[in-house]
Length: 184
Image 1 (cartoon, one colour):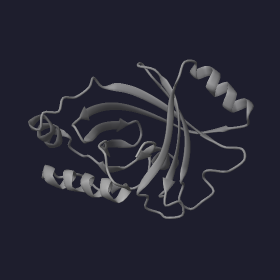
Image 2 (cartoon, rainbow, N blue to C red):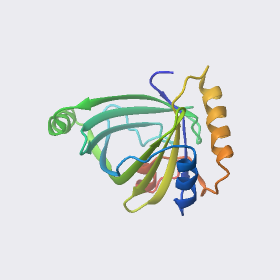
Image 3 (tube, rainbow, N blue to C red):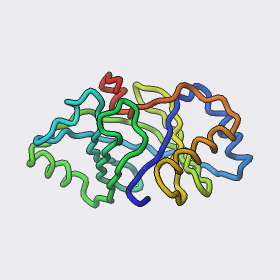
Image 4 (cartoon, one colour):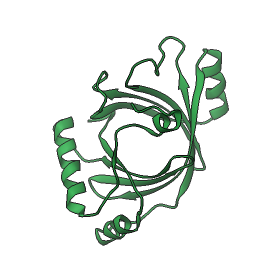
C-alpha cells in the first residue's frame, strides 16, 4: 500500500497513561522535534471550496530536514475520511520551493506549528503532537502490510482497542482544518 496512509487521530487530554502502555510494549520515544507546516492553496483548484476539504499541499520545515507533501483524502466527498493518497519527498532548499509555489500563484492558507514525539512499534507508529493554538493530540498510523485499506483500518482499530487506554474524542480532520475553524 505504498503512497497510502491509514491513520486515526484523537484529542489527548493526558498522554501519560498511553506513553506508559507504549513503554510496556517496548516502544521508545524519539526526541521531540518542532515541525512548522505551511499549507498552500492551488490556483487552479480551491482546496477549501468543498464542504469537506479533501486535499492539502504542505511544505514542512524541521531540524532534521524539509519536505513537500500532497495528500488527497478519500472518500473525496464524504465528511469522514478513511485514508489518503500521500506523496512526500525531501527538499534541500525549502525557500526555493516556497518561491516556486508563489511564482505559480499558490497562496498560503495556514501555518501549523507543532512539537512532535514519535513512538514506533512493528506495525504502528504513534505520534504525540502539541499544536500551537489547538492542543494535544495522538495519531496512530498503520505501517505494516495489509491486503487493502479496510484490512489496515481494521488492524489499526484492533491495536488501539487492545491498548485499553482512555483517549479523547476522535478527530476526523487535520490540524489545518482546526486552525482554519473548519469542521470538515
